[in-house]
Image (cartoon, rainbow, N blue to C red):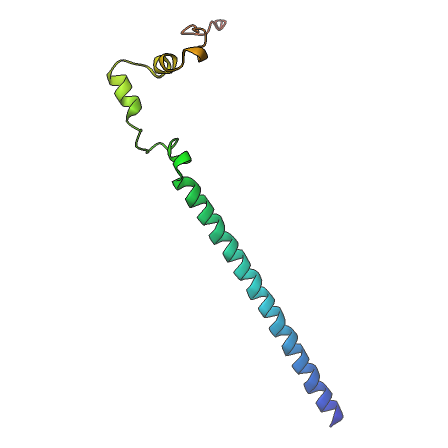
Length: 101
């Protein structure tokens, strides 16, 4: 009788340990999901921020390059006209690579 009681107590302890392990696994899964949601939220907010929207290909100023091309103004000419202090020396149109024989 005492042996049966000890076996029952051991089985109960084993089940309790298994339940604790399952709860720890669920907590770990919850933390991983929370981390993924926060990472997704940070990425979405970074992509929607005005600082990144200026460099986005589909921003409001996406047609600016096409407008300059229609008006005959290149991007380099617009840059030089906008900031004369940052002008760079004119580079040749082509590099003088040695010809392959």
